[in-house]
Amino acid sequence: MFPLTTSRKVSWERKSSWITRIEDWSLNFSGNLEKSIRNWLRLLENDSDRPQLRVVRRLIEHEVYQEARDYLEKYIGLDKAFDAEILYLMSQCYMAQGLIEEAEDRVQKALAKEPQDALYLEMLANIRLEQGNWHAAIEYLNKAIRTNPHNTELLFRLGKIYTYHGEHLEALRCYQGCCELKPRRADYWEMKAESHLQLQQMAQAAISFDRALRYSVNPDIVARLAYCYVQLNELKKGIHYFKMVLKYEPDHYDALCNLAAVYQNMGKSLEALEYQEKAYSLSKNDPILLNNMAYTLVQLGRSRKATEYYQEALQIANENPLILYNLAVCHAQKGNWEAGIDTVKRLLQIEPEHSEGWALLGNIYEHCSEYEQAIDCFNRALKLA
Image (cartoon, rainbow, N blue to C red; front, top):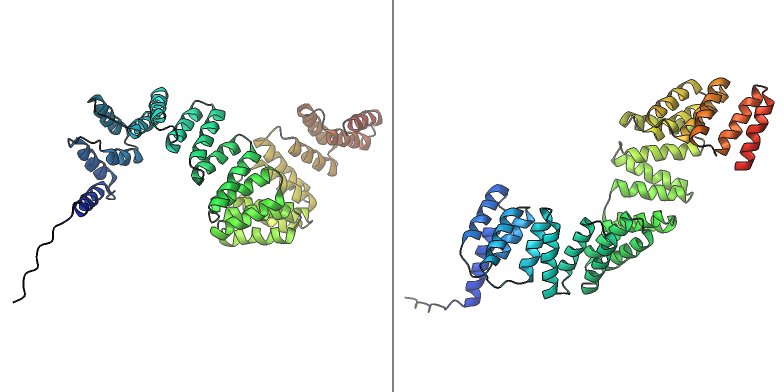
């Protein structure tokens, strides 16, 4: 007979870990959100000397703000001691419900207790953004970053605020910091590349888009890389990458339009028209595409059809100077002098200092043997050139 083993005493640490696991299980999202929320709300009904902050955080995470707020307000109303985190959670609830002043009051009190907490500083930045004061929001985000300099999400958010407000150099610095801290995040490299584009730094943008592709094969990033190569006059590479996009996503609208533009600029009108027609099958309401198709058709000698596309484009963008000018040129090439004059005059009413428009009008008058008017138009064009 084997001797019985002596019963081991279970330590309090192990008991605590069991309790934690039970709590974690009760807080798990079961896949049925409504059922999970009911379970979490039942947990809040249990009397406890300590606030059920883990439950409250789950409720806020799933946008159950009113019940979370009611619980926190009730808990504080019992005159129990509460810390900065409770104030912060209340601020989150108030903010989500549009109670901006109350949200600011709570987070300011939280900051008075813990002035270096990055979460509280970020919350105050959110409030400033909601109030339309983005300069103050940037100030608080910078403070949050100084307290937590390795938090790339804060830095990335700051960069996006700068981007939204056109501060592309400042945004670039933020995204550069993100890339240095976490170099394998494709979205960081992508936004860095976009900042380079806004600053007309095409070579650096291409490098950053290429780095983004190492970590995420995204057709949009490939298309942006192709665009960079075209702008750098590396047309072979640009075409290669645009075709790569279309291989995996044949209906990628931007790639179709841009590849058509590349071929048209290379004088390959038939190839350009092929991609334009595919893009047109996807969207018939893009005035720029209609203008480009019309221009390509003019190069192919199909002026009648080109005129139809120009007029279709003008129904969508009736005051676009580029489309009006191209239509006037089309009329002039066909010898439709009266229609050409009417179109140029319409252009010059919208943009009186359009030098090419005045020169074109002069050419049309010259063809019509109206030399005095032609000379006046040429003089206007020379003054504006």
